[in-house]
Amino acid sequence: MYKFVDGIPIYLQIVKEIKGAMISGKLKGGDKLPSVREIAEQYQVNPNTVQRVFMELDKQGLTYSERGIGTFVKREPGLLEDLKSEEAAKVIENFIEEIQKLGYSKNDMLKALDNAWPKGGEQHD
Amino acid sequence: MIDIQGVSKSYQRKTALNNATMKLEQGKIVGLLGPNGSGKTTLLRILVSELRADSGSVSIDGEKLSPALKAHISGLTTSDFMPAGMTIQEAADTYESFFNDFDMERFHQLLKEVDLSPDMKIGSLSKGMKSKYALALAISRKAKLIVLDEPLDGVDPVAREEILRLISSGFSQDSTLLVTSHLINELERLLDEVYFIRDGEIRYIGDVETIRAEKKMSLDELYREVYRR
Image 1: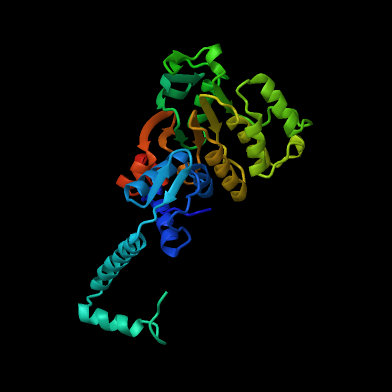
Image 2: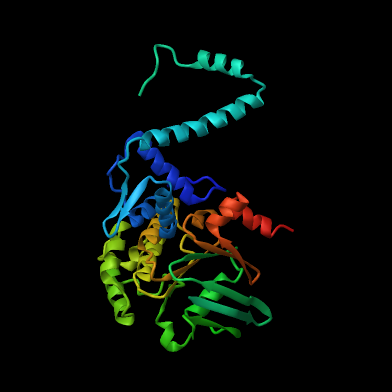
C-alpha cells in the first residue's frame, strides 16, 4: 500500500508522484492519465481527492482535459525542463538549508560537493 | 444531504448517544471515528432503522426518515445475516429481491476485484472474505446513504488493503458513505470529512485534507490531541 506522509494533503502527494512520472518519462506529452477511479483504486483514496489532483495538475498547466475522453499530459516545449528545474530548486533549497545548519560557507559547500561528486566522468542522464 | 439532528439514545441509565448532529453531503465519504463502545454502532443502527432514537430526527434531502425513505439507506451492521449454506450468488439474488436499487453487474465486478467467486459458500468464507463480500453487497446498492460499520475490524492487513481498494473503486458519487472505525490511521486516506466520537458525544472535526494542511498532523494525532486530558 502506498505510504502517505502525515501532515501533507494527500492530493498534493499524488500530484508530486505524477510529476515524478512526467520527469522520469513514464508519462510523456500526449499520454492519457488513468481515470479518477483507477487512480483512486491505485492509492486507495477517495475519488474526490483524485479530482483535486486533476484540478491541481490543470491549474499548474501540466495537463488538459477533454470532456468524456480523459485527461492528458500537455505537449508543450519546455514543460519537462520547467518541471525539472522546479524540482531541482526544491532539492537545492533544502540542501542549502541543511548544510548551512552545519555552519558551512558557500565555498566549504562547493568544495565538499566537488569531493563527493561520483568520480569517473560527468554523470549525464 | 443527510441531516442528523440531535439524535439521542439511552439504554437503561447509560447514554449511548447524546444529541448527535451530523450533516452528510452527497458524494462524500465521511468517517465517524472513535474507540469501541463510544456509540458509533448505535448511531448506524438508528440510521438503518434497527433501533429507534429516543429523540432527534434524521432526514434525507429535507424529508424526515420514514419507512418509505428507509429504502434509500444501505448498510450492513453484521455480516452474518445470510444462511451459511447459501452461495454468494444466492445471497446476492436474495439481496436483489429485497432492494430494487441493487446493481448485480457492479456486484460481480467488485467480487472479481477482490478475488471472490459467486459460487463460494458463505459458511466457508474467512473473516476477511466475509467482510469483503458484505462490503461488496452494501456498496452495490444505488442508495443515497451507505453506512459501513467497522469494515476493517478483525481482518488481516492484506484484506484491509483490498477493502480500502474496494471502497475507493466501488464508491459512487451519487451517494454518501458513512464509515465508522476505531482504526483511524488506516481509514484516513479514504475520507473527505471526519467526525470524532467519544462517550456518545459526536464532534465535527472537518475536511481531512484541510486538517492535514493546516494542523500538519494525522487524524490519529489529532484525535489524541482533542481528547487529551
